[in-house]
Image (cartoon, rainbow, N blue to C red; front, top):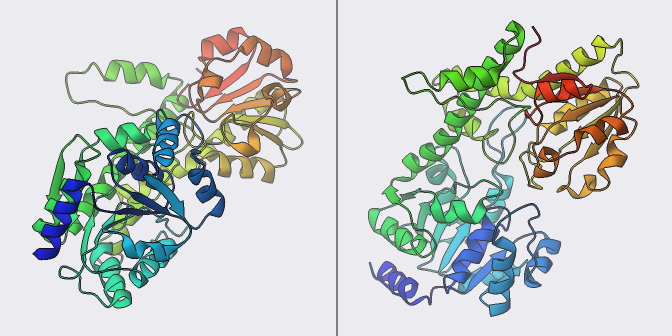
Length: 444
């Protein structure tokens, strides 16, 4: 097809103009890497402050992201990457990559595609013939054929597969390793036509050095949601086993160590205070959302229930600790260390700390929060901990792994320590005078 042949030549010569819609944890590094590869890249986002930062060469993503700050500064300075609020600029794009949020409704557990639909309508209004559109956002099975294709065709008046081209290349990213994951994680390309898939593969080969497997859109949608659902189920098993160990007075970490030596395939995940982030809490629901009324799934919803319950299990562990010294939560001063959903990141999306803190406040506790990466909770660690009756560890930031626990104990008013991330061993905590409770650590 003439359009695809022309696009291939433009990609090969780096003359193809690339646009990225949505400059979050996915879109920003993807745009910067294409700019580094030699393409002129336009980033479009609705947040004015983010656009201003990027155009000044400032990385809008806080936390430890090796190489990203320097990369953004370099490609903006070179003139190959600029950001804008104006969707009309997409009229010049040869390639449009979509990386907007795709959450699920908290009550119905069904996809909530307000941002995606809005982006599609804005893209459709500014879509020129021959443009390749690639969706990186994770979506429920059949979203490409039931939403993207019809909306883009209706709004643009163009025909998919003839006048514009469509594919799904879902990201495989984790904050803290954004550039490493983009470059080093295998990708699947779900394209409307193998010839379209070959063009997408050619494009992404400019920024990755891994396998790029071409398939159909439905398979790609299931691959991405299934991979994160697998992780969710494995984490749920680890969490349930951890609670079994607690109930029986055993140590999950010893069990895990020895179970891994059994001559079978045993790969126990780690338990913890809950699962957060932009993928695992929602992707299982995306995977099964088209099945309502067709198939009753059991393991996946149960795994979600277990993992969603872990922040409340932390509250129960805290209550156990307080009960051991004759205290209740009402009026108790609780210091919570860690608010982001994973170590060394500012990402708070679906962070387990959010429901845990809400529950503590509902039960009458006075809560202080500290997190070295989340703007609202940065500041003096001592001030957050000083005079606290109890301390709850929710995130294993490097700063917390290297705490002077003797000083922390001196700052506190009480000695209750609840550890949701195995930040300190029970033996060490007990020696320092803490009354310790931890996920997976039983009290014989």
